[in-house]
Amino acid sequence: MATIKYKGEVFSVKVNETVLDTLLNNGIAVKNSCRSGVCQSCVLKAEKGSLTEKSQQGLKDTLKTQGYFLSCMSYPENDLEIVSSTELQIPVTIIDKKMLNSDVLYIKLKYEKDFSFYAGQFINLIRNDGLTRSYSIASLPSEKSIDLHIRILPSGQMSNWLSSNASLGEKLYIEGPIGDCFYSGDKKEQPLLMVGTGTGLAPLYGILCDALGQNHQGEIHLFHGALNFSGLYLIKELFLLAEKYSNFYYYPSVLKNEIEEVNQLNQLNQEVKVGAIDKLVFQTIKKMKGWRAFLCGNPELVYSLKKQLFLAGVSLKEIYADAFLPSAK
Ligand SMILES: Cc1cc2nc3c(=O)[nH]c(=O)nc-3n(C[C@H](O)[C@H](O)[C@H](O)COP(=O)(O)OP(=O)(O)OC[C@H]3O[C@@H](n4cnc5c(N)ncnc54)[C@H](O)[C@@H]3O)c2cc1C
Image (cartoon, rainbow, N blue to C red; front, side):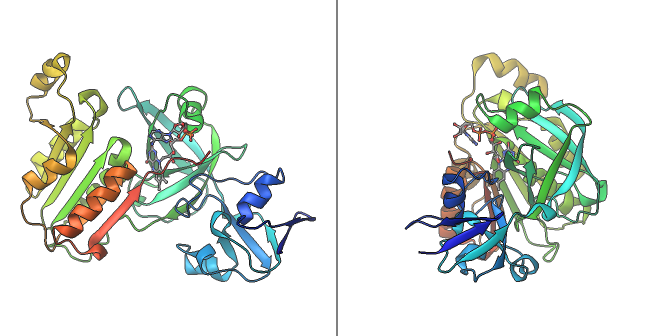
């Protein structure tokens, strides 16, 4: 049976236990969120002992060589001596905060040391007590700050705290950036498809602004879905971009067309599509071979659309997806 040495204490790893399980079961607080190897919030560093390939999957090579690993994916085969990864954390301050609609909070973070990222990647936001959640970056690196769109969940620990308790000037930490969901600028003529529901718009908005700013030549089609009209946001801004750039097409869509919202739709004087977003994508775009796709937000939609796009001829290498997995309980 392998053991873990952490802060002077030694713990035995039980059968089928990960390093994260062992530490949590022994009352050690380790920050974590998705517990499925995606969000990277449970990263720890091994100072002694060898690591399995799976426990380092998805980490940057520079982190792998230094012994960082995902504790939720680590079933140790030998004894490990580990330390926390606080040196990866970057202090940030909330410098702006407002509502984008009744459920979506916008916050702007200023970072206090160098931080390189691409719009569309995600960061882990860490509260002083260690509560950690992943959020996608909606702003460009040239802005020298990080914009987040956060959906407030009725019993959500981080989202509620950010909306009700955190004020301007609040200090937090971030780790990252993580992920490959961003505009690489390598194929300027390639048509781009972007699909997201709810705050899945956050990374897509960042990627869109990056692509337009880098003079992307191919068509860009953005589908943003919500249950009903009040769930959409940045509608005016996106219609303005569609007016300004002839290669950009924006399709706000709702699952239900509520009667009381008809007035709002009329005021907008623009078309809002009604129906399931994946059906709308295929009704609107008939041939997708050769396209690049970005899919973000609701995990079920992301996984199902990924499969449907593949079957429609989009290469898996051209599909970039971030499923917003909830934190594990
Ligand atoms: C790669 C990645 C990127 C992400 N980017 C964003 C982003 O840009 N914006 C954003 O708002 N969120 C994003 N998320 C989700 C985010 O990390 C949190 O899970 C979310 O904000 C809820 O955290 P919380 O602490 O408020 O709620 P919790 O306290 O974790 O959850 C409270 C309750 O809500 C449920 N719940 C959690 N998430 C959801 C959900 N999405 N839908 C329905 N019920 C849920 C939980 O099961 C629980 O019952 C992302 C997640 C990942 C993995």
